[in-house]
Amino acid sequence: MRSTTCLASLLILASTTFGCRQSAAPSERPANPPAAASTQPAAAPPQPNTAAIDRSISTNVGDPARVREILATLQQSVQKHDAAAVAAIVSYPITINPHKPDALIIRTPKVFVERYDQVITPHIADVIENQKYETLFVNDQGAMLGDGEVWIAGICKDKTCQQTDIRIRTIQNTTGKPK
Figure 1 (cartoon, rainbow, N blue to C red):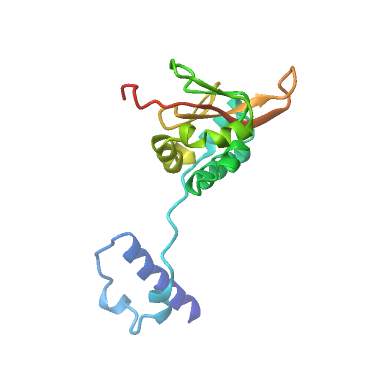
Figure 2: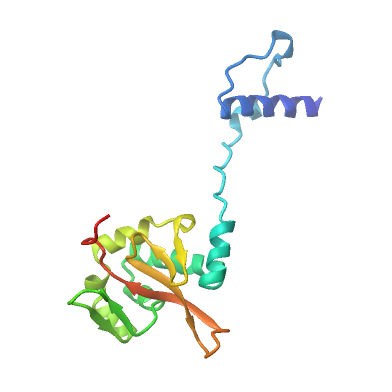
């Protein structure tokens, strides 16, 4: 009896979730649909398949879990306007807007914090906050946020690059670039 009730609940949930509009024959309908069926939480949306992006990050940047961690830390820190936390995940020295005449070289976390509002502009903050892990563009230069406003890269810690540290390598304003 219990398995029949569970099966009926699943059928009701499935027909509601997947938009099935065809009614069951009167003899197949449960006389009293179980109350538990209506109190069941909706199924969580399917998680995107990130296997391909994970492989690309593993090949080009380093540990995918570390890239996820850096991205999450960056997003949370920018939302909170926590300049010190952002500065802690940057590779120094860093050149801000490297391809522009007003490029800014920042050599220490202290200077990054002092210049935070000049570096993390509203446009760059918006790009960071809206980036999804599964839509990162990845190549041998690193993992790109937005249209190249921020790059997360594996930084070699030894001559053979067997040990890497994943950090923010580039921050640049790309709003002048054609889209």
